[in-house]
Image (cartoon, rainbow, N blue to C red; front, side):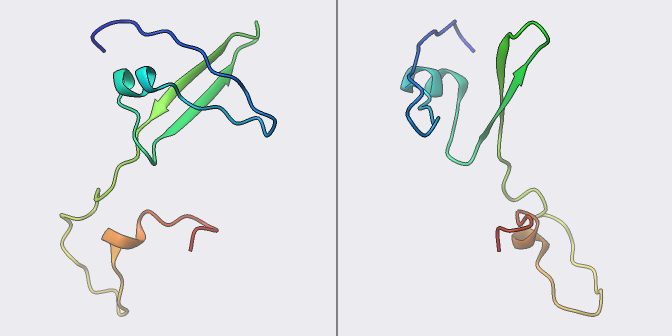
Length: 82
């Protein structure tokens, strides 16, 4: 990051928050990224940006496993996201 950015947001009635635009720009937050929340023993809250990576397997050569697969498309699927 090129410089520090500080902003605040309000927790709404459904406990959702909006990441302020200046923070999104400075941290490079994009749709699909995740925010990992952490509260330490002293109650200090911190967050970490977890970037979503697409196409991580797109350069792999196919392997014949006896049935059709598409790792480039299927690797992003997790239980319940079908």
